[in-house]
Length: 255
Image (cartoon, rainbow, N blue to C red; front, side, top):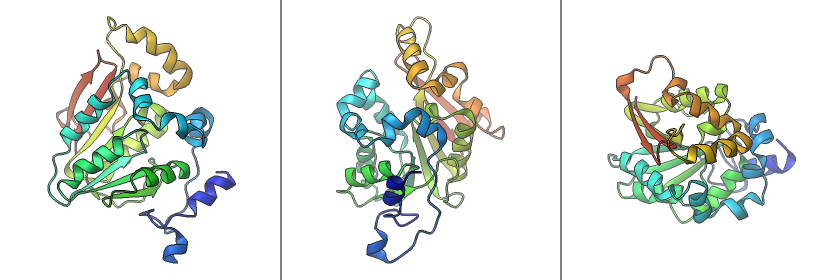
């Protein structure tokens, strides 16, 4: 982690990450996580560079990247979030665009809270500003592969377009952690890329794009997402849905 990232990180109290140390007089409870090498090497331009927000933090840009499917994919997550009042929901990794605000607005109807985890201080700072008008959101500076939450902390967990950005070892750990922190009977909702059908022309458009810019994404073309789940997960716990000719998938795991 560079000096600028550490300076931002030290401005957060842990685990809630909502107030500065100067405001609370408190010191971090958990250590500041290092930025993973794969994130620095492969995705610095998209998530770590300050100027990335000027381009990516626009709903129309995110929608363009997803070929017009951002609203549809967000809606399918919200459909799964049927919660009892005062529930706790975890979002693993920040998401550009209006995703977090839409989830928070949806949860506010039941008095529920959204907790957002990300390993990059600059992303936490950005999402903190983005949801500043909402009082049911907390940001946590943590690594998705080694979260500090106790087991069974959340009623539901959402992992939205993160796994394709991680190498296999990190992807497996993120899935394990998402399951660990979700209560029995709760859902872990994964939305990500998927190998499209051969007759889908997007297969031939997206393959070179992903291979160049997001090389780990091809893992999700070669293997179904459940292949990266622990062996203890049974097929009957999994519900799969596919969108846009199979280019995108939603996998709902009932813990």
